[in-house]
Image: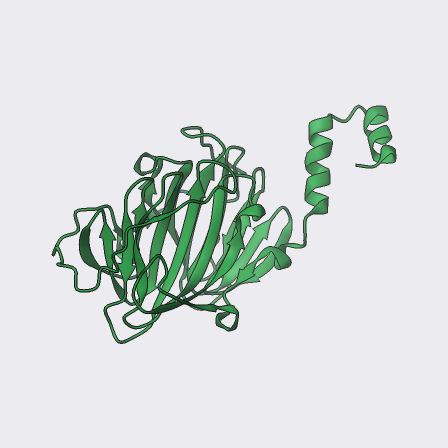
Length: 295
C-alpha cells in the first residue's frame, strides 16, 4: 500500500481492513490467469513413487502458495498400466487420491479394494495408503493434500508396492463415487444439483468438505462468499464460465480454480452438456466454516 493511498484512507475514514482487502484484490492476477489448465505435455515421468510399481506421470496443477489455508498441493497426472504409488504414511498431512477415469486398486492400512472412477479415497493422517493401476490402460489421477502446518510435507515408505495384494470385495475404508444420480436439487437455483460427498468429520486436518455439483445448460449456481473457507473448483465434465468478484472467465474439463476468502463466486453452464464440478473446501480453523449466499 502506498503512502498516498493510506493518506486517502485516513482522510476518507475508510476502515483499514477494508482497504487492505481491496488492495489485495487489485494485486491479484486476472481471473483467466488464475485458472489452472491440465496440460499432459507438462507431466514428468516418475518411477517407483514411494517404492511403488511401474511408472506414473504427474505435475503440480495448483501449488499450495495459491491458497492462504494449509492446502499443500493439487497434483494431476496419469498412472500408467501396472504402475502406482507404494504403501506409505504421512504423520502431518492428509491426501485424497482421485480416479477421474478408469479403475484402480486402493489400499488403506493394508486392506485393498478395486475402486472404479470417477471416485476418490481420503488418505487420512497416519493411515497408510497406496494405489495401483491393475489394468492395461492409463488411469487419470489427481491428488489433493492438506497439511497441519503451511507448506509441511512428510512421508514414510513401507516398502510394499501392493502388486497382487488380496482384494476385499467391499472396501473396509472410506471411499466415494461421483455419480450424478445421487445429486439433489439446490433450492433457489433452477437446474443446479449438489451433494456433500464428504463432510469435515471425515478428516483430522482442516479439510472442510468435498462437494459434487452439477449445473444444467443455461443454469448458474447461487453467488456465494466464504470468510472462513477457501475452495478449489475442479471441472469434472463439461465447460462453463466462472464469475469471481465481477470478473468472468471460461473453464473447461480438467481446469481448476482457487477461490479464496471473501471471493464472491458463481459458476454458469455456458455449454451444451452438463457441467460437473468437484469442490474441495479447506477451513481457516477446524469446525469453523461459513457460507454466505449473495442475494
